Image 1 (cartoon, rainbow, N blue to C red):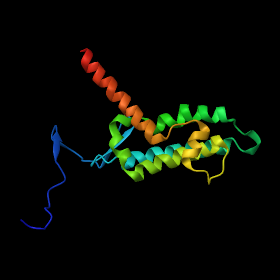
Image 2 (cartoon, one colour):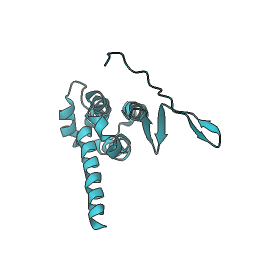
Image 3 (tube, rainbow, N blue to C red):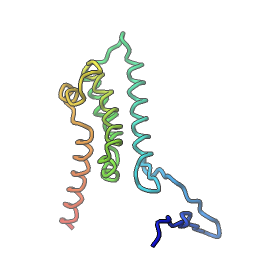
Image 4 (cartoon, rainbow, N blue to C red):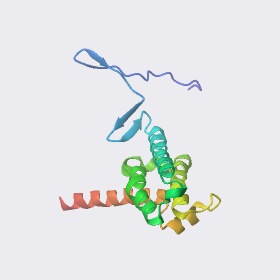
Length: 159
């Protein structure tokens, strides 16, 4: 027994047709970014940045002269931003339980909720969700993953 950390070889050499396959730290598969420890940090950053860019482009396009109504903004959120945020939730549901990942997605939802409610930035996130009639994104993600699990179990029972 020792306190010294073991130095194990982390690089695995895999050959196909006598050609070495390089080992990567992250992989994008079907729109979900997997990292080597399955923490989904890269995926959360990617999704949050993509949604923020979309929200800021929307705000730039809909300036003061051409203000979008609450219904139009809600339609954009429910049809464009929310699906981006919850895509693949059954795969990375455990990552959302970490506070920093949850906070990233809540910040994105808060940005669009402020625009939908036409409220000040000092309004709390929960109040914004009530004003706009939307569900907190972490609850929506857990609901989506739970529905997927129930349908998956239901399919197993039928077969």
